[in-house]
Image (cartoon, rainbow, N blue to C red; front, top):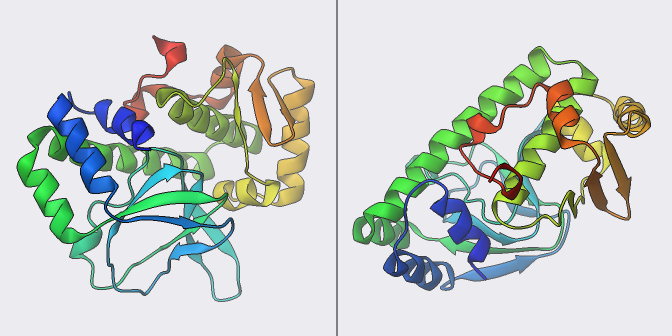
Length: 241
């Protein structure tokens, strides 16, 4: 159940067998499941736990008063939520499921215990936080500087790389549960613009989308048009080994 989480954290620090057993033990204490398109935590709530995504896709987002939404990150299997959540009096963002999600809630007591008992896990969690900040910088560049074609190509490369790093790709194919509205909310585009851009990416022979599956037809070209350099993720996918 924690394989993706172990692979993700293992990308940031060398984990021993004891470290992996400790991750299994802590993550299995409070496992929950939630259906698609539901809030896991809501902005304004008092933080109760750190969320660890074990299976399924989720997103962090901010909601405007008029209902508009800005997605600020996508979470895939293996992704921890915000490790700094316990210093907040109130949550400043929401986390919602995209698909059916299985996740673990890590209490502050368990977080303190696992980081005290395992320097390797502690190092991995803090390195993950630095990687998250790096991803946010790329998203700022995406919205501020890249055009629609580049934005969507870059986002697809990022998510494919993250899935690849935890063994959730099949060659150049992976699950793709995102709607055009999800992509629009993450890239600052309209769903219509997203639709046209995806069609252009298809016509250019870069990708195929069907039945909630993505096939990357030319990864090198997709990375090139998106200006994607995977170094900012600090993750090694199968395609880079």
